[in-house]
Length: 136
Image (cartoon, rainbow, N blue to C red):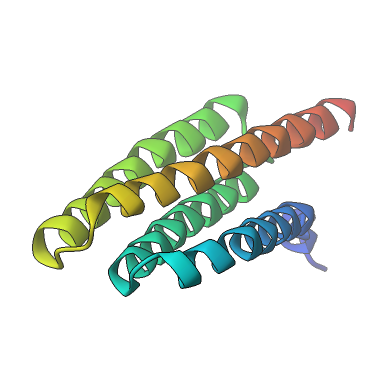
């Protein structure tokens, strides 16, 4: 017989929200980028979005892994993971700017726009998961 934790299913509502937000914002920015921006600016924007997307998906994995653990473990995984994610994002940004000579302004701008959007969704997801955990 399987243990209760082995039967656990992942909550797909958050990845679905991320996908919808990504598609909507990408669709809104596609026309101005491809018509008015150079190829270098477009590549920098895409790189920023991909870094932000990888960051939020790593956060989702940390939340799903630790939500059923003790509060201390949850905070260590989520907050410690946040520090690791920030360090990885910084390394990616520095690598892209210094080694690959990607334009810094569109890279940082697109990363921050998507980061803030995804961060709001991530906080709401954590709040929903904690409320569900407290009720059940």
